[in-house]
Length: 170
Length: 412
Image 1 (cartoon, rainbow over the protein chains, first blue to last red):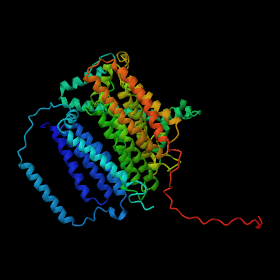
Image 2 (image 1 turned 120 degrees about the vertical axis):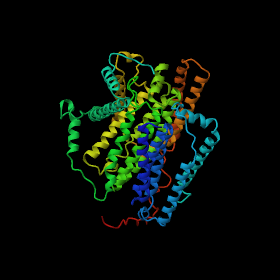
Image 3 (image 1 turned 30 degrees about the vertical axis):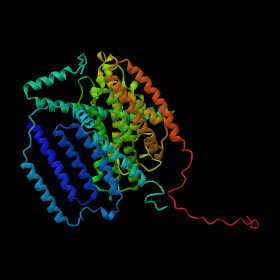
Image 4 (image 1 turned 180 degrees about the vertical axis):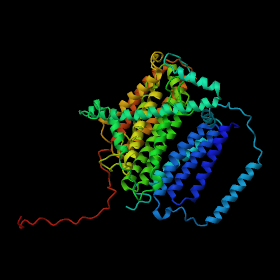
């Protein structure tokens, strides 16, 4: 990680991610806020790439930018126009102080921890294959539980939009 | 990777890179190769977009028993140039109530995934721009950005038709992304790697194209990609007779030109994916020692692009509910069963270490399975199709007072 290109890329990505995260909280229009959130997702994907986690980075783009952002945009579209002002946040100042305190605690702990240094090898196997093996050998139970959770979510969605039951008045 | 060094390899360029690398550092060669490769890809995509305009209009015209454009140059060959000049000199309109910052973003944003898809293709044995380990997944990830750009386009136009068109396209895009991903998983299972160069190498090693082993995967991918590209028969989002022009209603001039060009470039990219994953990429059963592999690859890309044009010229447009029913009720179960079958076959082939001739058996089994499943699912989803819905849900039930009986004594 001492390569200059990697360090420069890291700082650029950090500026992009943190800058867009700041804009999410401060910009006036809610749709602009979601678009800046999408930009911060892309920045996080770039940070994954600087850590050589290629599979995680691509999956981050695929899931967050491709699916979750669309979900959030749909949700915003379904709110009435008066509820879409990002600037009218109640208790803005106390929340800002609280967020700053949380950030300070995290930064302090990050500097204080004695991180175990990886000893400079670029030679680990392909992350996708490793993640696949890990999901099927040590982590098979969380894998199966996650699929059950997805099935429950899909059933809930289908139940909500069924005609006759649910919130339909007709 | 199996190297081939023949008369058509880019030896002058290679020697130039080595000369630069000897005189300066290695990073300079890296950056230089990156720039040269990027310029090459962008020129291929740009010239491809230019040629595709002419190809589409001419071939669709021929299929519809008329001549295509034939006025502008010999055989209408300068038609794309005329189109480009026309689009450039148009007035740049921006609706006043539109979102000023967001309005100019989508034409740029929709261009990026189209270009990024070309960067993982394997044009020749050692001619890959970015040999990513997760090539296939990378293509899927960047193509999911397109739907986001279309939403921003529809939203920032401040136009109900644009928003409606954008919503339809997004619903279709996220519905067809699932069979797309599942269909592309089967070649990855067979090849054991997600990089496109690796999959082409696998097809060269076992001397059989994955299209013969996994016909259902090819079929599902072709349909899902046509829907993702918003081409007929799935171009409900841009149908002129339905919602003016969908999400690019408010875009005039070259912005619309960019949307149109990106649709053509995306068609080339999808043809490239089909050629790489299913039809052997740059290999042609040994002919790549005599013909340049990149020429074979480009030929295959344009062959499948001709297939896409053929689809557009002959099939009518499907309704949105027909498209959604097709995706959710037919393509997803078929894709899932395809994955199970492919995984079982790969398990039997590799774990029991059978010889490669079992692949022929697998191919026959897969074709039979495809026909059977088609028949089954087709029967399943067309059974209720001719029955109208039980309740018309868009209109409240109003009670119409019955008209009085016609008076026979009234004079007409």
